[in-house]
Image (tube, rainbow, N blue to C red; front, top):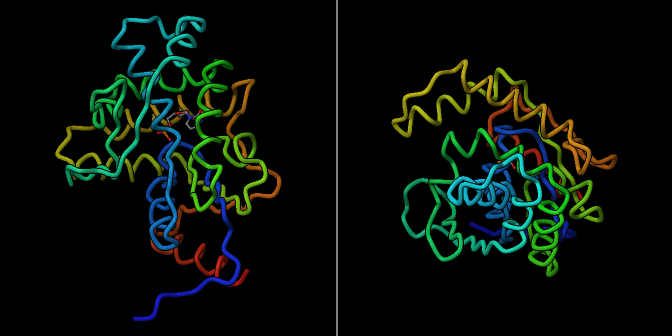
Length: 232
Ligand code: DC
């Protein structure tokens, strides 16, 4: 099979959207197809939230959470376990790949993400990682704040019902006992905080391609985006 050659692939691709909109799966597939690296920036905010819980820092104490975020060491590496997670997440030298996905972290991660010093610290790290290009960066504010000059910006939308259903199926497949209504409620809670915060709120960049994926599979979205890249 011939490898597809793209005339003018975007060196940096920003993918933003609400929780469980498929950003990470789609971003990672796109990066694989292009031979790029991908960075799911949600992992970094999750690492801060996890560390705050572990250190018994009050997540409503902005100064304490910010101090912690400015000191934290986050290392994101390709997975070695083959356990369904694309990346290993090493926080201050310890593997917390699965801990950062816990319901406890889900509950407070949006709260810790509102603090400007937390965002500055994470944004600085993200820009360093992106400086050589050939990257798909996934998050909430990548197209608007972190990489405003990204050559391609994608904003994925889906209704809360569809996102909850997708997350529910994923969790069941992992053998977890989950409740669809609770998932939907947690997504609504995070949407509200992520979109309503003063600094870097979740919203599409003016020059983003906005895609509603309610009626699309992951593969349809990826094919559509690869088609756009091929026609550039
Ligand atoms: O994509 P995710 O669900 O793993 O993200 C977890 C939280 O991190 C999300 O609720 C808000 C925050 N986040 C953010 O504020 N900015 C980003 N670029 C990525 C994530």
